[in-house]
Image (cartoon, rainbow, N blue to C red; front, side):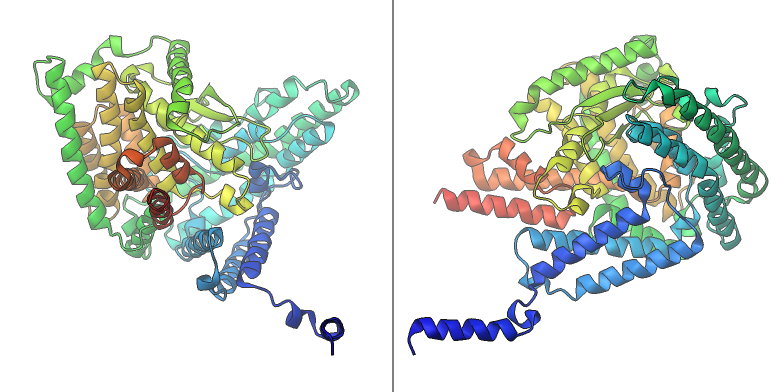
Length: 591
């Protein structure tokens, strides 16, 4: 038989075989199918998350959080993990191995959070649905008539959404899962601020005050009337019910303890949170605490050298008191503070090409933190851009209580929150074209916050911190994060009191006392998150030192940063694999 007829015969045989025999699904195919299925499921289950990442199919809905929903989602998460573990990772290559590792860690973390019933504690002193909901007006597209109708539909749904949170919190009271009472003092302010007699005074009405020309003028009055009705009949009564519940049921039953260890299964819970936020499976609270003590000692030595350099006659505490009380270190108006910050950011914008080969296209802006949360939150935070690129990222600056906002910390603070910190890293991650969607929006704290802290030090390499007071501010920002390694496990695992943590922070940082108290209360309400910053920064610096030592004159800082950033936020073991592979490839290319 000649070759032509043999091939023809084989082809005819293949036509009658089952597709599964002819084209067996590879492990990579299974992984990508599971990734797509899981992502679509997450979008369908959380309309709010979908909006944030740029999927607008459910912009008229809010999430559903009944106990039945949570039980169903937990079961589905376990099913996804079982399907993932059935895939042979050894047969995966390249990025697929990273996809597998990231997805596995996320699914396991979600299951653990459900096992420790954190859904029964959906609010704390600085975050929660009642604080994030008013910000929806800045996160959704408001261009067309349909956009405004979707927004109003969410206002109308807020009553149901709030009641479901209240149900969870009530069950949390019953089972012993509540916030510490000390950090919930003043929390009603962020609820009562939205109980207004005139709906047009509500923050939620702001988008209706100036409807864009893209919406026909004939629709304006209808939409405004519908928004007023939604605020009066849904939003305000929901905040009233929440306030009443918190006054009569929740706050009186919040716990007297501050430690995560005091919760049911609390010791295991904090150990889990330490691993979750560092992505280091073998780390312990005790090891974190010891590393923090070592870092505080090292940084204090550098700070003492600056005190000597500026010729200050006095000890560390006297110098810090001088910084906290001398008016020359503080802006006189909120506008002056923002102007000073904007100038720092603009100067750093021009330095970025010296440090980076990859830069994001998405811009960022500067705006003050809203008044209704400013007194209970810290110096600044970052709000990421829209996942579809329709909204910029924002560096949000606290302009409340100006005597607590030192100018000498602004360079380090700005580099952390904007560029080369959060905005550069997160906006670039959103724009990476080769990543599946779930990777674009992954947010491992140890990477995201570790990168932002590492970025503060980058200012030294491009001409910032020339003023010794500003450099002292940089070190105070660094020691602040080192102190977190001490006080977070100290309070949650090792028996420290809140006052002990406050005293330790006051003794070792130049933060204002307002910021110190806000910070300590933040750590109490968010166990484990605060340790991610320094652990991540230390690992990035260690990997950079390794690369510099291995590559010597062939080390290129722009290429190193491209390697660190081009996979998005990843666990630290994956980051190390990426850096070591790059070092090996550079060395191999030069041989």
